[in-house]
Image 1 (cartoon, rainbow, N blue to C red):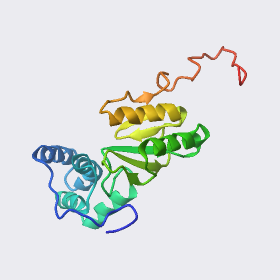
Image 2 (image 1 turned 180 degrees about the horizontal axis):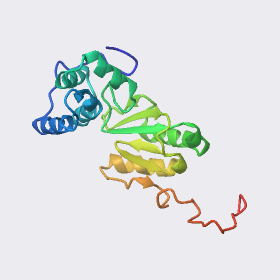
Image 3 (image 1 turned 90 degrees about the horizontal axis):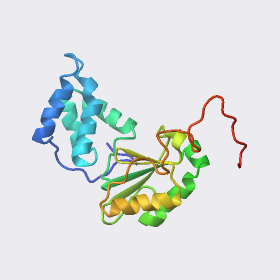
Image 4 (image 1 turned 45 degrees about the horizontal axis):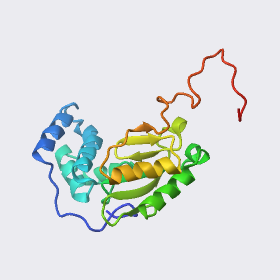
Length: 204
């Protein structure tokens, strides 16, 4: 298996840790007999959380556990973009550049990432701390622009807040996920409104 999103440098084998073997068995047990293949995505996710990416050896191991043809597991792993088929940095910074984020300033967020990290899309910092990727819609359009780092969404970004976020991660801090402007959830940027409020004119 090869392609633009994979690497030729593959480990010879893969095995779940003892703890993850138990987790894998618990996941498989959720599905009826003969339907174990339905566990393929959570098991690939488990492999990625263990190793940081999904190697071919990990896919083969998942296929064996589930009694699937390896090609069926490859098809899943290569279709869904959340599976990383080559090593990534400790912090995988995924910048959404789809239309809503672009309209709200994702170009500036992407440039801030490049400036702060010294790398471009598809690259990893020499110390292995950060990988920078350009991605399509992540489903947080109302809080655009945003990035996903690991499992966390960081929203309502601008160049300055993006750089602060990356500096905090580099320093070993755990920035608060969600809106970086302090708004609660997806509340209107100007604060809560009601159906009887008169909307302010643009620019006021």
